[in-house]
Image (cartoon, rainbow, N blue to C red):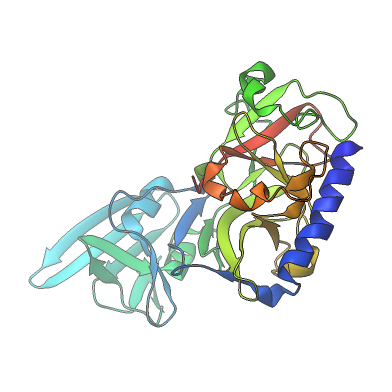
Length: 317
């Protein structure tokens, strides 16, 4: 109950700091790098990265994507003409560098965008992967992600995410109930995830897609933006030997992405931190000195987390 009241109080006080309205939040910096997710796991590209060209077409390096899907890639050259072939058990694609069309299972198809050679890699329009290799492909304009295959998210219940003993987080227990579930029961341990594990489902709870730092246009204050399939889940910034910075989302700033996900905003600064010790001191303005880089972890709270806590290694540190 104490945790719930504190979280609600955080929301009330924080909203007063920056005003309301989704238009108050803006992402800082240049557009994110286009990423490719195969069966919800981000692919790694050693050199040439996927990108969006001037026409808005999403271009992917065909070799790495094809081989990840079990297909073989061949290269040949006839004079100044470079050709690329992709062969799988069920499909065959023949392409020529510089052309906008390709032969897919013997049928000519035009993609409106040239197949190009860049950084010694062959890049093709995203739709060619779908039609040429028979895979379900989806462009996620919110995350700038290319989804290939299924959307069965990894889960913190999976064996690859080991349970860390609660005693290993003793330095983060200055806030007494921080490692309790919503029924007031102490967690058996902690699951630690990293940004490159996203997207991931937290047990039977929400799916966390991504995090970013954004700034309020109105007040110039920084917030942590979390894309999730849920709205209004509390979180906390954890510092070693310090009180947890409990945060509720700014509901007035919530953005519905229209794809069953939304943007939740957590203020980095909040006057609720004055209550961290349980005693309010009006003259204590130390809460204003907190910086997101001081946090070691971001803890996600969810009613569906019954037996263990989930913390994300702070990607902004």
